[in-house]
Image (cartoon, rainbow, N blue to C red):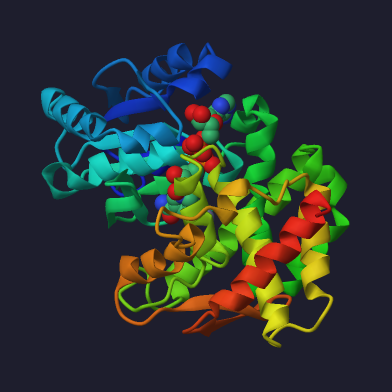
Length: 360
Ligand SMILES: NC(=O)c1ccc[n+]([C@@H]2O[C@H](COP(=O)([O-])OP(=O)(O)OC[C@H]3O[C@@H](n4cnc5c(N)ncnc54)[C@H](O)[C@@H]3O)[C@@H](O)[C@H]2O)c1
Ligand SMILES: [Zn+2]
């Protein structure tokens, strides 16, 4: 499969390849670093590993270390990687965001193959076109759009995932179902037990449908590089990104997204867009999947009394420029863009969630 993807354009060439592996993936699959060179040797007619697989730490903190970007760019130069060679990344969403950025910025873009190893990376981030790292306290501030040469999802990687990460990634499936696909949402409700338990059949089907919906948006949505003001697949994400930063990434991306979904769904009901009951339905699904939908950071204020969560709205707008554009819900399965959110209504939605999660 890998060899086929590699040789897709130039079948008779021997391709030069460097492989970076998320260290946590390698820890869970200790023989992987030996299996990769063995595979390369077995396919010696079409590929040549320029170095043994290299381990790079994984997790969100890797996106906060500018030195990693420079170190890896330097490494590509040392290895003589040119634009016809391949940089392969095997790892979680954070690791792939970093490796993709390194590949896209070296020689103005080296061919890049992603092998995502988390639920979130397989159903969302790994199949996208965005790369980047965090800087100056802002998530994904430095980055670029660069479509990967290929993305290969392999369910075997998910076996060693921390249970928390298995669940967290499902938030992106709930998100895309809510704004695009009511039938998928009903399927998620009907299969909640299998998903919560990480049952392979349910997980595979969920990942496939979610990845499909993400790819369709990129390929046919009309704005793959987000030059407009909308981030059509980022439902629930204005609050999520802010919460990740406010909790110093104590919340996983998917966990923060789940909170953002509950909040914006409740808001959609409050302002009369989504019929009443939709909020409870979404809340129920997220709870049954195993999400905890509250974090004290949602209520923190700065020394001048400004509510920090609300800054997330402005940061969301600043990221794209132009007019604030937020997706809310018109129905289960149908998102709708708005250009304003009322802080008092957001506060009421936060209070609703607080009440449900803490009983106060
Ligand atoms: N580029 C995009 O379009 C896009 C979209 C959504 C999210 N993202 C980004 O993706 C990141 C989140 O990705 P994530 O949820 O995959 O988290 P992650 O990459 O932080 O992975 C979670 C943890 O699991 C480890 N891990 C990865 N695969 C493993 C495996 N198979 N077995 C054991 N451990 C494993 C990682 O090293 C890490 O410690 C965030 O930075 C988010 O901003 C990017
Ligand atoms: Zn996301």
